[in-house]
Image (cartoon, rainbow, N blue to C red; front, top):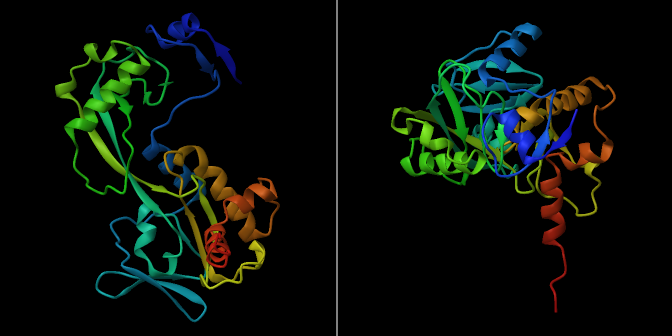
Length: 278
């Protein structure tokens, strides 16, 4: 599952000289997020609806209704799970969640098929194997920056990270022929995800147990993954599904409490009534 390798073995695995040893995960791998999402949707028999902007949500009676930009109802449901990245901040019902946006730019570099490295190599950044003539390297992390354009300086930073991972590797890359992609990570203040029911009010007695905090009926959040969305999203989804179905949690109770979105409302209540220091 995991073993430490020295710099010589690490270089052999990477196919390129490296500056230090590291941890080798022989059973690990990498995935293309779009293909993973498509496979999950197909396996669950879910019909996805794209190009359907939701301007606002509102609880009407016993259901949540979703409205488009013209005010028409797009759909309605008894259980609404907000798993829309930084877009969760757009909805008034979820404003209690302190989600921040962190811009990330990935560089797409031209790469020949079967060229090294043939495994993912990480060291403060990452570089992927080649697929369809492209290798990914990155990524930048800029908090509270929502500009969508590609930036030359962040591309240069990614190449510097690439050389930190694989010394001298950027010299083999036609950087001018590369491209990239910009995305926005939903980040939480304590760097843990938010998985669970959305609170009904921020006005809480500071002694309220976490489990007793009132929630908005049928409204749940899955957010705050930061740069670890692929790592955490599956277990987060299973945790929430287990809670909704009344099944045993796949994680420990204290960990489930640590990722409960209501933790922020409780911390705020406790800070507001804390005595001032003399």
